Length: 324
Image 1 (spheres, rainbow, N blue to C red):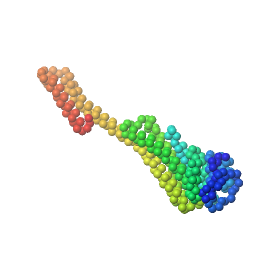
Image 2 (cartoon, rainbow, N blue to C red):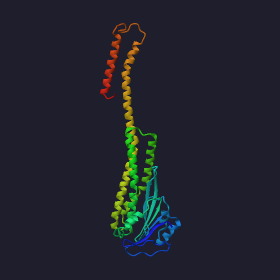
Image 3 (cartoon, rainbow, N blue to C red):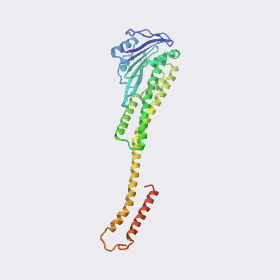
Image 4 (cartoon, rainbow, N blue to C red):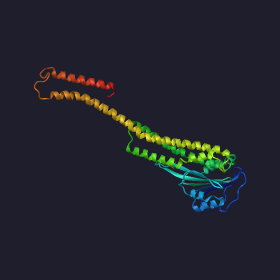
């Protein structure tokens, strides 16, 4: 069976470290006791055994087996059903998604994990080291799991920020190559999908933090507000990255147009300067017998001097207006 851990806690300390999952409906536990069952990639039969033992609603079980659900919170008679999405990025800058479903009741918490490579073992060990906090019940553990999931988005956002910052700095100096432009649009698609898939978790956290729900104590809602704040900052960073990616090509185009404008002005200035000797030489190259200073000894140096003076004057003028 795909059970990673199945433990019973009494006053925050494990009393049963391998709770049997036999499909037999169990009795409600007393105050200060709860079960925490963790499943990874279970099939329908395995999850059904857990569902029968803990009397889980069949609609929630069906949703837990479908790893394409959007984040949500649903209230059932014997438990809350919470769907959270996980995300990670591979070396090819492709974001892959997983799903963690939580069945939360007064005396049990069941997690069903699909597609996430971040196991809850380290989280469980950390929580078990603080019996006082763990004694607060399964709603506190549910908060810890959601916080663990949301914190897992930070390395992904950090990696994207580094990549986007590098592209932004390069775009200031040179216009992006086609491969870079394709990468920009690929990342924008990834971020849009991230917002679509993971974005609803902000609403889930808001509902858990501000709405009166069964199986969540009022004192526990402040913990869910902390998760909501983390999720809000994650989405704000993600939207900032999306806007930056959208502006990179636009900014690079403006800078490239400015560079091309400078080059065009320089070419136009030199063309104007070179037009002077070209025009004068063209005039004197015409086959007319009577032309100014044609047979004067100093005519040739004079014409060259005039050309030099005019060209020098134009050069100084263009320098003053910053065209050269």
